[in-house]
Length: 369
Image 1 (cartoon, rainbow, N blue to C red):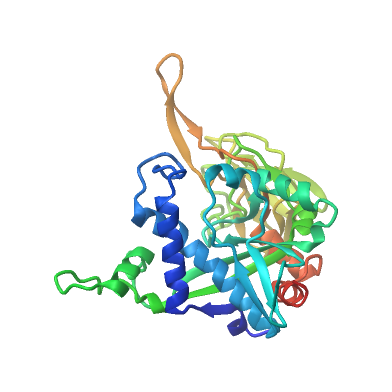
Image 2 (cartoon, helix red, strand yellow):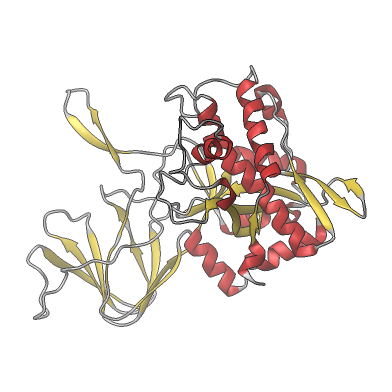
């Protein structure tokens, strides 16, 4: 399947539809004025930026799926529900199908999500999964997650690729103000990055709870482990030799052992620690080797490569005061429970055929929805 088949463009009417959705959302009296983090007031422009691209992604994915089958038209949910209704509903993101000039309900449950290219992990919140399981618990192989993104296909910088700015540019009725710096709204496109079933997520993914860190899903390459003469740098100590089928533990940078710290090692390597901080670990591979676990997947390393062997927190740290008013650093942590797969593991499962590749899944959805 050509990648061009997984890309959608938008008409001016479709963009208007999304702007009207954002307007109705903003004016709905049940909606709070604060943003989701309660960090500040969100006006109409903030609503457009927060919800516009996501709703366009839903329209774009409907168009991509329809294009794959040519005999259906799919429609996303563009109703604005009150906060009390949202808590009760378990609606799919594709709510109706037009086939043979008849409108009907979809035969598959589709949940559409924005793909964050900066995130190592992919999935849904635990409360969403539990709601889906209550309604579709016996048939989760027919519940699908589709991850797409809406983007500007131009050479503008990130600030100029602003959805609300582009909207203002498209409707500018006065010569007194210019919004020409922003992207043209006609340059918006949508593509699909991943698709798999909720059954796949439950089989191969895991629950990552509130209060835990968000891990980097890979190990960075390390430099300055050995000198050109073959000796360890003066701040490093050889801890042990690693050989086939050995269990090794990746600590966090502050020395914690996590539920997903244990890896199986195959190959031959040196495990090295930092003289001043034994929590900091490195692996130098003396032949082609692999490390693997069920959370992160498998990593293959070439002879001569070195890596930092610590689980790093993508959220970083924060400074707090203890009871004696001493300032201490603590890990920032998640505030919700999520069911996630690492993208690295997902690509591995695609390659091994344990999960159908995205194009195969999308063809199945377009045919059977």
